[in-house]
Length: 216
Ligand SMILES: [Fe+2]
Image (cartoon, rainbow, N blue to C red; front, side):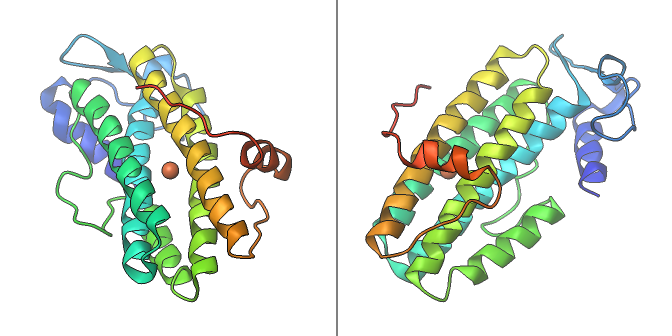
């Protein structure tokens, strides 16, 4: 379903320049055959475009959820990390524009998403964070581990676009720091978290290591 939106966005941007947009499922078919010629002369595959659209909205989701949870609990960690998520979603937006594409979040207010999966997740996570501060901090932990998995997945689909890879690496670094921050606050509140998306070993390795200085 998201795919339809993505293709609509791509078509909207490229207009008559669209040549041979592949319709095979992500993960199947020849990526090279699905490449879309861009006005700028660069080529992004359908997977790369979908990845940018998804990450633009997933980073916006993190921002919007944390803003909502800060309003509910007043815990500074949500406000601080929301500022960082604003920079993350902006970084992806700039890559989208740089490649001549339309921003899927150009006209969506807080809490509204073009991607139906992310819309449902937003609704679920904001509701999940209302019961207690510990519940809200666990929502932060979940968003960050999902973010890490999704960015890694998107990175694996980027063929030869150093600018996009650099942004994804920066997002990954930030997400690891956010995971550490939420986990610390959770432990300080007497809570604990079991990994749900990445492996527990990967969770432990990140949570128990020092904050990083993220470039870019
Ligand atoms: Fe984050």
